[in-house]
Length: 232
Image (tube, rainbow, N blue to C red; front, side, top):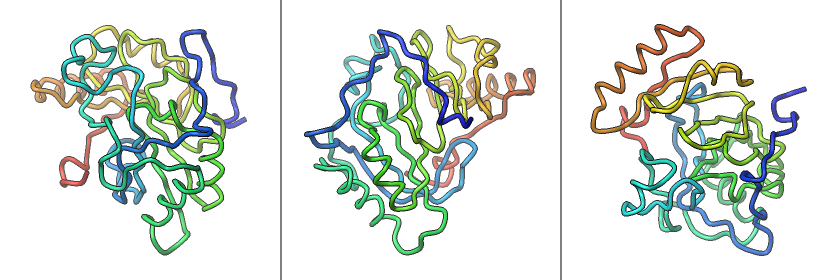
């Protein structure tokens, strides 16, 4: 059984919002780039960022009291490159395909946010698969993953209830007080990555991430290559 086929753990606190049926998908931005993080770093991909998150409003005045306080992403609104509201899964999948351009080999769509599981549904997954895209998601894991995803990357946040504890890639942004890497090692993932937090104390974060990878060989160091080379 593949990781995609295993049932996702559920809890009352992690019930999924209704899928985007009868309303538009709200997309912050959508563009062609190279994946900058994780196991698939360097791969050509269409990056689809949904608007909205369940751990932070995206407003600076709410950051200090949010469940996630270190997010480095603008996911508010639909005004980014290639963003907007898309009335159907077919329309949004068509946007992704148009950005990919010619060629049908090894197509990759990376879906993120915000939190993609607030909007990603089976209709969009089917529409992208029909266009021969592999679908990768980057999620905080507090909502169960939609069935049919080809690559699941979970990035846990301290103090939140992570229900998606299996997948392809666990990406731990480090350091985070309140997370025990030893406990995370019991979760069912193929790859365990530790990534320095992008923060004011960047050098200390890098040192902490390197130290974790050196002390616990199950973990591999992951860097944000897109920021090094100047890609979005």
